[in-house]
Length: 169
View (cartoon, rainbow, N blue to C red):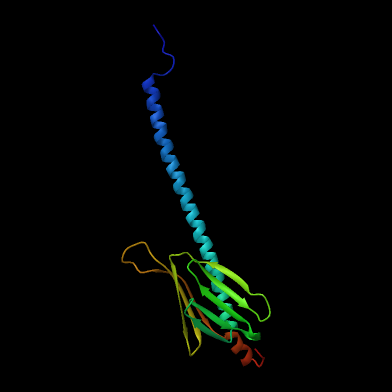
């Protein structure tokens, strides 16, 4: 009687084929997980940036004495106390906030805006209000854009409060 030691060529080929399929599936799953993680991080960065924009835009609107909508480039100019001008501009991939103080250097802040996000700004005269809406195009046919951010602010709110309390703005 001969005792077999080892594996036949067919058994080895079958084992290699099964392990190749398993490795291919595992690699695809890892790649998919890494892609989802990357997308989630990008989404979180965008939302953090839009949250900062919301806070800064509301604060500037409330402190402003007046606001003027600009068309080219699309944006908004706030006239602040002490002749300071704060300008918000909407570009393809970002919102830009520029704070201009006479005889000083201009300060710039950038807020991330993906290319598939669209922004619209409207103002009303009485009461003087600002409305900014940021929407995202959906990838589903016949579905309206999804609202990502909606900011409503009263222009000059802090100045009216200070004046109403008897102070100077």
